[in-house]
Amino acid sequence: MRGMEIPAALIQTLRQTKKWAVLTGAGVSAESGVPTFRDAQTGLWAKYRPEELATPQAFRRDPKLVWEWYAWRRELVSRAEPNAGHLALAQLEAWAEQFTLITQNVDGLHARAGSRNIVELHGNITRAKCFECGRYAETWAEDGSVPPQCESCGGWLRPDVVWFGEALLPAALNAAFHAAQTCEVFFSIGASGLVEPAASLPWEALRAGAVVVEINPNPTPLSEAATYALNGAAGMVLPKIIKILAV
Ligand code: OAD
Image 1 (cartoon, rainbow, N blue to C red):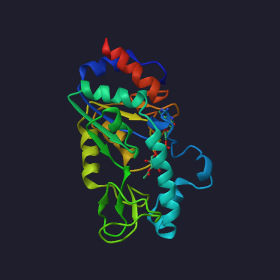
Image 2: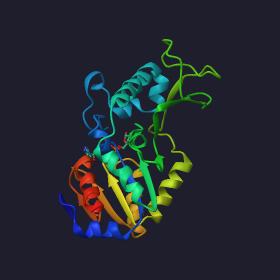
Image 3: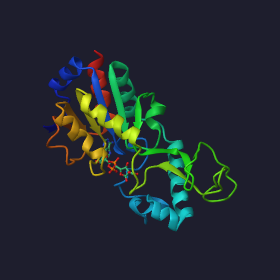
């Protein structure tokens, strides 16, 4: 079922359940001005495909280029503000008994909006770690060396994000699958459903008997199978749901 309106049956389900899990993708941050991965890239970076920059091979080949691309994204994210969709998700969490917010986003906007139980599947762009020894770095010297160097071993720092071809952290992955398998309602919001293993989570929830709700202005491989596919922007649809639930 695909449409713009919030179905009354969905509202009833939300009123009768308290265990919710949410998967968010780049679409949730689109209304904050953070470009999604599969939209055309803008400006300086228009000539690169993210898949060509977000790999260990790319970093080894041209660490300066990759560091600078992430520095540009980090700057963009630091100027962005959480939008109505992020805020609505923080409100949903406040009403739930069990709530896990699984995100593919690395922008930290969910935490800034007040969400608490967050599983960052793909890491966080605001942190870095050493490409050699793996030591985490919250801050680093901006002394002109690009990429900056690890304080402990002198290796290159890289962003603390999961690149194509790299494994996700087992603890994050386990928490995400556990949430999908034990929730009553699973939301997939602003995710294209093309990148594994996150793409499997809504299917896992369906298999376990959850009601699955997709929120996306465009159809995805999940849309046909979802219990409800709400055709709209996260920043429009989520506040509508909150408004109805609040009365
Ligand atoms: P994508 O860029 O693949 O897809 C964004 C999705 O958001 C699309 O399905 C859009 O239709 C939808 N969308 C756009 N605007 C929206 C809005 N206002 N509200 C709701 N939905 C909207 O993003 P992801 O699925 O997150 O991986 O991409 C997955 C991963 O691919 C990323 O985490 C990243 C990337 O390469 C890594 O960096 C490992």
